Image (cartoon, rainbow over all chains, first blue to last red):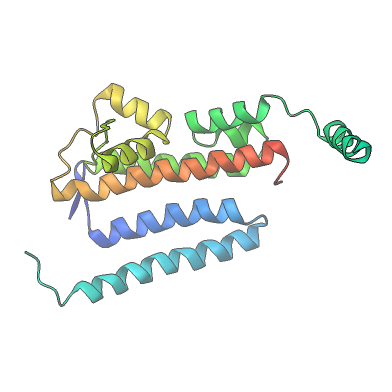
Length: 65
Length: 139
């Protein structure tokens, strides 16, 4: 769990927030029209989240010290 | 020889006088995320950059993130400091308020450290974008 004041975020919630804001900035930096930005935002957001989940599963077999 | 001189003169005359405005735009974009784009009347980008970078910075501090200090003996700490510094007013406000001084060894602060670093690096991209728009390389 990640502490945020009195609010506790799960790791997955932290990933979602990070992916959303980062993708939003990239969408507005690299695309011009609203449709293009929305498509890019969705694509980048899903990419961030899926890769993070995939990396998590790849690390799963390895025990924590 | 005369042809090359003429070409150089023509190029100098054709280059528009940019002045210091693009640099002011970049500086404003560093100081307050989105302010550079606001000066260029890119309202949507200004709002999105301010809210997104601000949210990442605030979440990072609220999550117990560690703010790097300038430490020339450690290149990673120096890079971390430079990245944090790129967040502009958020970094300065955090320092003034005494936030972000948590021990990086605490696991629960690690996400916050990364959130704040990301805010700084994204702001760096944004201020470079504002500069490019100001010099006419982008729209």
